[in-house]
Structures are given as structure tokens and as C-alpha cells.
Image (cartoon, rainbow, N blue to C red; front, top):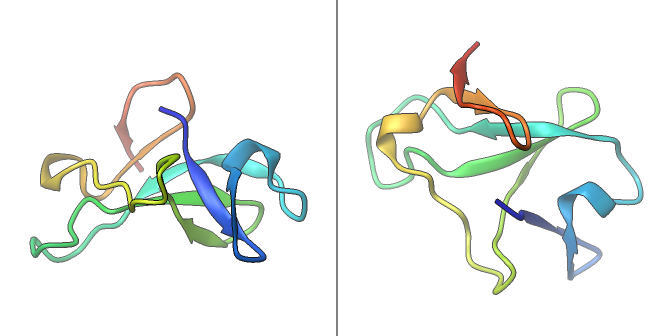
Length: 79
């Protein structure tokens, strides 16, 4: 899944983000509300950035994956 973040107001591929090292993905956990499953990109350190598709729409992978992590090309897993 190709993911993007906003850098200085422009969509940039998460892997190409110039100021942080790309580490993987993290899915928002907690509530089972409308935002459960919103995808965040995990950058170097404890920094999470909202993930977008190439059209600039927030990515939501669904409640069934909320609270799970993934790395590019790997299976989803619990921390």
C-alpha cells in the first residue's frame, strides 16, 4: 500500500519524507468509533503522521486492524 504524508503542504511518499526516517505503519487504536483504524505513518522516534492515499484522502484500514502495526510488505501484527 503506497502511503503519503503532508510535508510543507504537499503530499510526499512516506518513504521519501526528507526530515525523518520512515519506519513503518501504525493503526490508531482505542475507540471503536468512526476513526478506529485510521492509519498513521511511524517516523523515526515516537512521531506519528497521518497517512493519506495519492489523492490526499485519509487512509482507514478498518476497525478489525485498529491497534495493530504493520511494516511495508509484512503482515499486520499486535505490538
